[in-house]
Image (cartoon, rainbow, N blue to C red; front, side, top):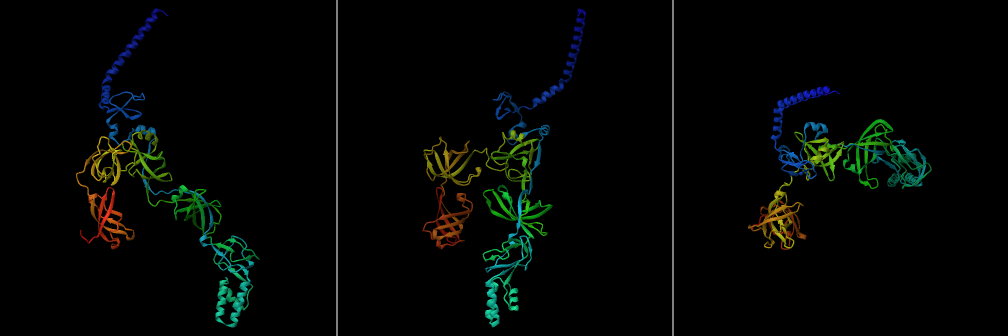
Length: 573
């Protein structure tokens, strides 16, 4: 390449570079105002502090690195956990869309599960009837040939030859020949007791001849269920000759698993379909639930009842059963997929306004048709997340309050110190423990009771005595123990005796025992209630009666209360 060409290329490059520089300078100058405005806007919001991305408890007042070597992220006023409920996560609409967040309302409805099982058609045993004979004999003629035959009331089932019945017929005829009414009635009654009906007796009297056999007839309509007799066979009263029953209603025996048993009660609805009769369904109900589970299969047996007007249902048919019990009242429910189960805890992710989400602990009950009953923690005003809830929960659960059921008012967790009043019942100076019968502690929803309290080592309890009234300051420790960190001797003298009005609700004078419904006791901050007492022999309980209005003297000794005196209400002190 010649030197002349090289000079031309260098000149061209210089011209192009100059043009680019001028253009860039012009663009930056023209946009300096807008960029300055953006920078100003970004610096208008000052961070409150900086926090580690993986540990919200690691906070610093300036930028830096987390223990994991990650850059700390700023937290602004609107992002501060103190500005919202603990565990609240905020995401914008674009992120919601990318995550595929879906929500659903908490609704109140009756749970109606569908329980599928199998069963077998059987006779309605409550309408089965049997044919027994009352005297031994031989079957002369059998008119029923097989199980399943239809018979009607009054049909002859078989004829029976019995020497004893023949003899009784002769006695009846002899009585009529003699004309003695007493003998006639006695002979008639004997034949009826042996199973001969009135019609056959009248026929014997009319013909004047004893028959060798009697007819055994059906006592009702039905289908033969069992046939235990044949022509020429010998029968005794201990044998069941024939059993039968109607088929206008049938039983279906079915079983369900133990975990499903709580749904089923008498009169629960049931639908039945049979492979043998396709395209048809029968509606019935649960007639009886057996009280004992099968120990081998862990199933609960039940009996269902179905109408069978056209006789299509036949005993021993195989049936497919669908049980559809319904809860008595509407309950709060959420979709099954919304519930997050973690160890001994169940929770959901609440969808709040303006893209805010929060994990909340709930208590669930029964499940049916992809819905779960919510026993506590939600209301119909809430919305819950049904898709992408696990991702939101992984962030929210790090700081959310999951130690108690959502929305349940309880002791303020921030209140770890409170004052209480009580009376010392025991002192253990070696262990630094006071046993105190304290009054109700409203700040922590404590009722009146006797408790052991550890005493801070800085406090001197040597000057305290049993029975001394005390005002004491309790502190809840990190391991949920309670410690007395301060106390004041109560200058007000303890009230150890009070008179109380009430009514005797139960009296056992022979055992010196009495139960009293008493009115409120303001001196001890007691509400109205019922108490049982065992009294000494100085109080004659046989002078009182149940329901009587009385006044009684209560004496407190530590945490024990005794009834020292008892008077009718009309008496005066």
